[in-house]
Length: 211
Ligand code: SAM
View 1 (cartoon, rainbow, N blue to C red):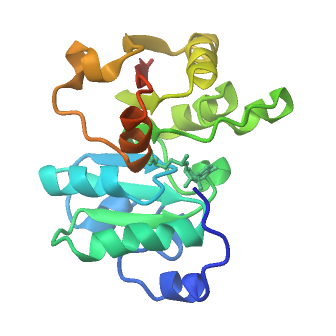
View 2 (view 1 turned 90 degrees about the vertical axis):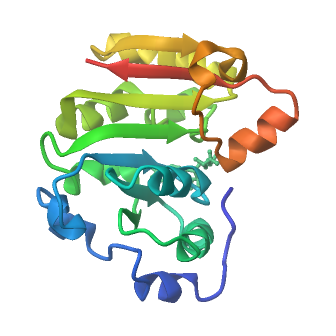
């Protein structure tokens, strides 16, 4: 997904109205940015932004924040965002490893993880966005009645996530190994990766985790 060395991408992002430049300064007061007390849903590792931009258009009464580590990818999301009239969607260029620096207790109502990088080597397991280390980070700012929704076509990563969630004290529900042919597919919004991999015939796996 990473598009390396897009010239000028950092400067473009630094001047963009849809990107929050110092996200740490909003910790505990994201509602001030949106100017309302609507629920906040975030996508971690949003890539080119199709999923979260579509949701923001569909749900004007929910505030959305898309987090992406790489400028070269984020600029693609900004391009999409620029074609949409809405005031409920912002982006952050940020490594989610430090996500507790930007969200405070009970601040977020829902977390979306879509087609997260698999980090297949065992020694990199802690970097997976569904690892128990990341679940512990999410636990600190997700509302008590909030949940994580995770989609992937990567079976080893999905199986890993099915193990990690209970180990970290989370409960699973709405688990399916073939989302598109399941009862949970109604209203499903596809991501860029989901379109690509499902068109190749890969089944899409999905789980919801809550505590
Ligand atoms: N969610 C999108 C989709 O389904 O089309 C993109 C999937 S892509 C495989 C994973 C994305 O997550 C990449 O754009 C990557 O840069 C981003 N990412 C990976 N680790 C991250 C982290 N620690 N913090 C923020 N973004 C991250």
